Length: 162
Image (cartoon, rainbow, N blue to C red; front, side, top):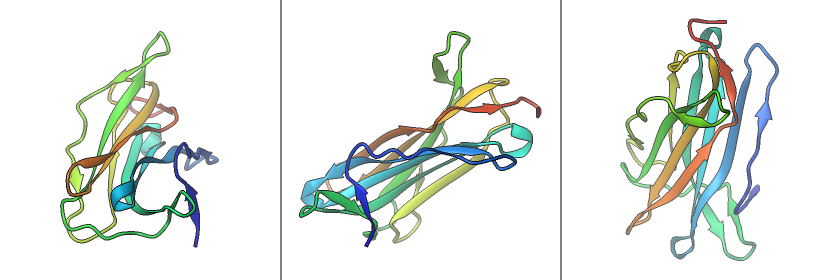
C-alpha cells in the first residue's frame, strides 16, 4: 500500500511542451478523530494556444495513526460531503499575485465517492502574464468542513494565444 507523508508534502512537476503543465498536490488537513485526510490538487496548464487551463480536486484519504501518514485508500462519502473550488490569480507588475476574477462555484461529489474535480479553460482573463490556480478543498466530517487551500506554481498564459 502506497503511503503519503501527512503534512508538508508538495510535489511539483513541469512537463515538456507541447502539453506543458505545473501542479501542486498536498495534504491540507488531517482530522484525527475521524482519521480523514484532505488532499488538494492545483494545476495550471497551457490549454488551447497557451490561453490557460486549470484543474483542481479534493481527495479523501485515511490517516494511519500507527505510522502518522495518510494512505492512498479512499473512504467513501455521501453526496455533497466533498467540495472543491478554483480561483485564478495573476501576476501584477510588482511581482505579487492578485485574484483575477470571481472563484468558480463550489463543485460537490454528486453521489457516494472519495473525490470531486473541477476543470476549466480560462482564456487568460487578466491579460498576458503569469497565472496560478488556487484550489480550495474540503470534506464534511460530520461537524465541520475540514480542508484548506493550495496554489499551483506559476504558468505563462497569453490573451488570444501566443
